[in-house]
Length: 390
Image (cartoon, rainbow, N blue to C red; front, side, top):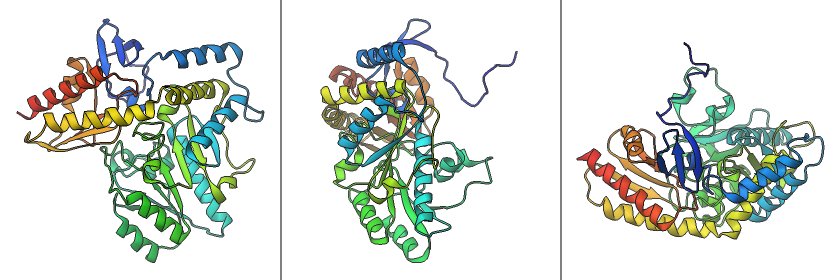
C-alpha cells in the first residue's frame, strides 16, 4: 500500500509521543536527550509551562481573525522585538523561508523606488535561506536547487567570509542593492566567519548604499549568547529575519527592518493570511518573556563556552577531527570524512544529533539544558566520534 505522505523526507525510525524539557519519549516509552531542539526551534525545550499556558489561554479566546484587523498580540511581539533588536518595525510570516521571501521582496521594492530596474542581491556559497523558489535560489547549495530550474534571477553568489570578492563586485557589477548573509552558517556546517566579517560588510554596504540583510533564523533568540548574533559585533543590519526559536515550535517568522527601508512596504505590497495571528504571537511573546526572565541568553553564552572547551579537551589530537567550532549553543564538529551514520549511532545511545554538510556534527541543544545534560552530550558525542574514527 502506498504511503499517503509524499516521500520527501528520509525519516529516522523513531516517532515521539511527548517531551519535557530537554527530553523526548518515543512510542516504545524510551527516553532521549535532545541535542537538536527541532533544529534550533525549541529553545525552551519541550512542553515548557509558559508556552503551554500561553497556547491554552489563547486557544480559549481567539485563534485567528485576519490582518485586515488589528491584532493586539502581534503588536506586543513587534514592540518586544524592536526593543530587543534596535530595529524599527516588523512583518510577521509563518516560517523562516517566508521571512526571507519578505526580505528579498523588500530589497527589490526598495531598489525600484530608487530607480534600479534590475536589482541584484549578493548571497554566499554554503548558505541556506529556505526552499521557496526565491530562497532556494539565494541558497548556496546546488543540491536543493537541482530540478527546480529555471531559478529566480537577480542573485550574485560569492564565497562566504570573503570581503575582497564583494569589493570586486562593487567595482564591476551594476544594480547591486543588498547583501543577504547568515552571520553564522548553520545548515552549511556551523561556519563562523572572521571576527571582522560583519563589520566589514556593514562598512561596504554603507559605502555603496546597499542594504545589509542578516538571516538570523538559526542564530537568533539567544542561541549564540546574544539575543541576535549581530549584537556581538556592535553593528546594526538594515533588515533581519527570524523564525525557529521565536515560537518554540509554533510556526512564526519575522522580517524586521530599520531606517529608510522600514517604510518600503505599504498596504497591498505584501501580506500573509496566517502570519502573526493571535495564537502564534501569544506563544512568541511567552518565549521572549521567558528567555529574558530566566536570563537564558547569558546561560547560552556560558554553557556554550564550557561545552566547546570540553569538546576541545576530549577530542584533542584525535586523528580525523578537523575542527571544533561554535558560539553559544550552536556547535559543530567537523570530521575529515562523511559521518551521517553517526546520527543513527547517537539515536541508539538515546541522544538526538544532526550531521550537516556531510561531515559536520551539528549540535543545537535547548537553551534550558542543565550542566549535567550538557556534560552528557559532550561525553556521548566524544565517545561516538572516537569510536567512529578508530
